[in-house]
Length: 314
Image 1 (cartoon, rainbow, N blue to C red):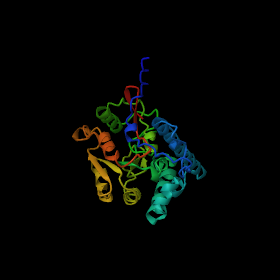
Image 2 (cartoon, one colour):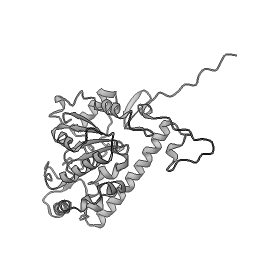
Image 3 (cartoon, rainbow, N blue to C red):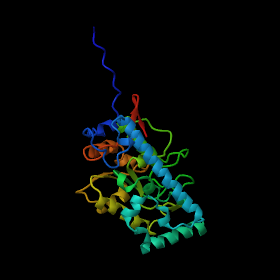
Image 4 (cartoon, rainbow, N blue to C red):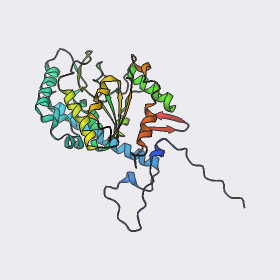
């Protein structure tokens, strides 16, 4: 009788190349501490990736609801330390938001929101959205931006990202164009990068608030000292991360990063004014994945997963 044809296997995704096989437990051996559905040997790599991402999204949304409830309870005058709700960052930064400069920054931002001539972006509960969405213990890569988008409805607390339904700014559009050229990914209809954040990409602006239509209006008020502390904390307490520094402002943060422990990838800024000066063609995603593949993601899969024969940006 002729042998049965081999069962076709699903095409590998980019994520699969980073998945290391799970260790087999000896018969009767106890499950490792912290074992969960995500690490079950009965799940495929794709199922584990989805389960892990869904758990991270649920945690991020819990943090978002908590920050929003605190902002509402304060009537728009919540202290900054009350809006940072992700426990791993509260522990890692160890009272940073109670330092004198941070208290003065809090007074400035509160006055701007309550008495300033223009609206302040992002909304209060989204000021620390990058940290509340990407826990300290999940950070694998860092993309550093400048200050938030200053148009109505654009800023959501993640550098370069905009909420669903908001037109993609030119910088984000150029990021997607480079992704398409680099990996053949189809460009999504939205500009919400929240799924990148929950999978370990910290999208941190160096200034976290701004007045409507006034770029850099909250620069040099204390935010830079805080976000420098975030970058230094990551550099000191973690290893093997990749920092993507686009443009001169982001590249000035090189001094805060231990290059013997981390990988630093530099290029021009993706804005319409400078993308043609070195951002296009930098292949930042391929470079990111190549740097991380042998160091990170032992059980988690990251960022871009093809569906059928087309790669999708997720």
